[in-house]
Each structure stands twice: as structure tokens, then as C-alpha cells.
Image 1 (spheres, helix red, strand yellow):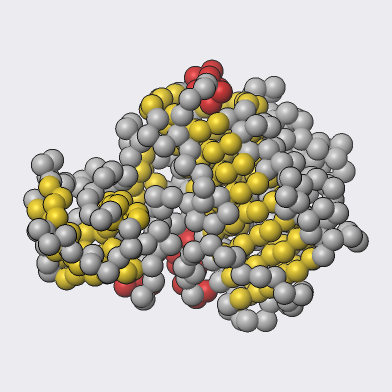
Image 2 (image 1 turned 90 degrees about the horizontal axis):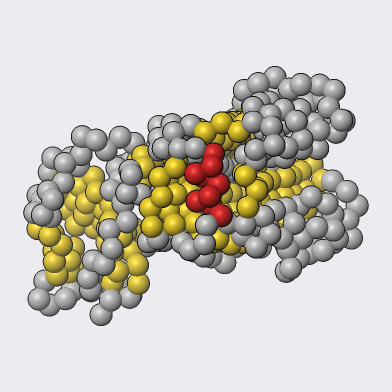
Length: 436
């Protein structure tokens, strides 16, 4: 076994905060239907601070990690609409992409047909406020496949905040926050005087990717004040809504609006979600020809298991590996300082961490070695108070206290996450590869 690649330096929340569940706020890879997304991988680092630089970096050929270092403002007819392939798009902490155009083309980024393998993290998308002109969303995914959107914030899109339509497929949306801070503007040509509708999946009953269903995981997301509907609204979809948090101040708000569609039908597995403050959990739309199934597992509404909504048919549990938080832990996890939203820290070299790591000190000559019997990992260069090993679903599989060594004898080959807490209290996370 050897340590092959340092992915990030990050501060983990103590497992004790959530009992035996140790939550990975800063995931090194997506979980769920978008798990194949690797983005720019180890591609070149590109720093951008203007609209032109961002557009050119996104449409360039070859893999790249693009880092937005300053706020960028989008006016009328300046939406970036490009085919984006093999790119990771990151933002320095607090950086915003801002649209000021309250008109049909007032979006920020559209992933056009042919887009594939994209990661977007730690960016704040801000629009001018809801105004129904059948316009563009802050982030529009027309046909990108293998997409991971993580730790982003979306506010005040004129049509919606973040939609996935047409041929979009295999998507994970994690640790994202959605809301509306600006009062809606009435009188738009689209007909709705209050179009604070956050997330649409499928633009019509007949629209769908090639396999008939949009496969999308929403994980640890937060629909906050101002959201009225579409949290999400979907048709022809295969959805897993995992450990999400709903708390909006809009009267008559609706969380889930679903219909079967006319292609692949819709199945929605809702697990460990806290509908703390939303008027209605579910509404069925349309008289589509394809079936619709919905299942709620370990969910609550305003602290009660009575959601005002019942299971429909038998929506099947996703087959990919993941770990769910107990529903009573969801609010604390999602709303914490390291929870949903652009709460990460990104460096100029693309390292991603939780919170502010400016005061973290780790020896430059830190060495990671193996014992001679190849059954344990030994750490040298720091004094260790605790070590843990997690699989990529977040499950802890090994632990050592007050030891410089941790046993790996019974682990299968593959990637894992090694967590270390030093005697000084520093928390370090590293991706490791067990290979015999």
C-alpha cells in the first residue's frame, strides 16, 4: 500500500457532533448518480477574474481546473453558453458570479449540448430577482452528462436558480443552498407574478435524455427563505433526495412537484429529509402516460413523521454506495458554518479545504511510510492523537487512538480517505490508495 496523491488539506467536523456518523463536508469525489464526474482532474490550473477569461477557459480544449479569483458581473446578453468538457470550476471563498439582467437572457452559465465531465464547486450565483419571462436560469444544464455541483449558492434567478433539461444526465448536486432574497417582480410575459421556482428537471413531458430518465442525486442541499416551488419539480426522472433541508418563509410553498412524463417515468426516493418549514411536501402534476413512484424514508415535517404525503407505488432505493445521516442530524449538518453553500476554501493551486486553514501548520517534510509487514500505515513527522480510515461513501472502517500506525490488513484494494488529528488539534484529510 502507498500514498499516491494528496487531494486536499481540510478541517473535519468531529464525529462526536453527529454521534457515530462522521460527515464529509468536503468530499473528494461525488457520491450518487454523478459519481463518474472527475472534471479537470490533474489538468492545468487556470486563474480567471474577468468574463472573457472565464469564457475562454471554459470552452478551451483539454482538461483544466479553473479558479475564479474575483467577482464577475454578467449584464444583458453576456451569459456564457458553451460546450464544456473535462473542466473543474472553483471559486475563491466568497467569490460571486452576478447577473444584473432582468430579461430573457439574464443567466450566467449554460452547459450546452456535448458538455461532459464537469465539476462546479464553491461559487455563489446571484441574479436580479424572479421575473417570469420564460428566461434563463443562473446555471442551466442543457445536456451535460456526468456533472457534480457542490458547495454552491444560488439566489434570485429570473426564471429559476439551477435547471437540468434536455439531454442532461448522471448528476450529483451536493451541499448547495438555494434561495430568493429579492421580492418577485410581477407582470412578466411568462404569466407568473411570483416565479421563485428554484430547480426544474425536464422542460416538458416529452423531454428526456437518451435512457428516458434524468438521473440526479440531491444530497445535503438546503432550500431556504424565498423559495416558493420546484425543490425540485421533475418529470421523466430518477431522483434520490438525500438528507436535504427545507426551511422557507414563503406562504403556500411546495417542495416536490412530480409527474411521470411520457418517456421513462419518474421515481423519487426521498431519504432522511427535514421538511422543517414548507407548506406542502408534495404535489402531483399532469396526466402523463408513464408511471410515477415516490417513497419517503426517515423524513420529518416540522419535527413530525406526518409529512402530509404518502408513498406512491414502490420507488426503489438507489444501488450506489452511500451513508445517510439520521434525519434529526440533518439541520445541524446542513446549516453549520461548514455546511451547505460556498463554505469551502480554495487555494491558487486548487486545494480545497473546509473553513479557513490559514492558521494550520503541517510540517513541510511530513513523511508517510509503510511498515515492513505491509499491514499498517505509519505516519512520521507529526504526533498523532487519532487516525481514521473512511471508504468513499463516508463509512469509517478503521480507527487508531494515540498511535502513529493504523491497521490496513483487512482492507480491499482501492481508494480511501485517511483522517488524522494531531496532538496539537490540527485535522488533516488525505486520499490514499491501498494497493498490494
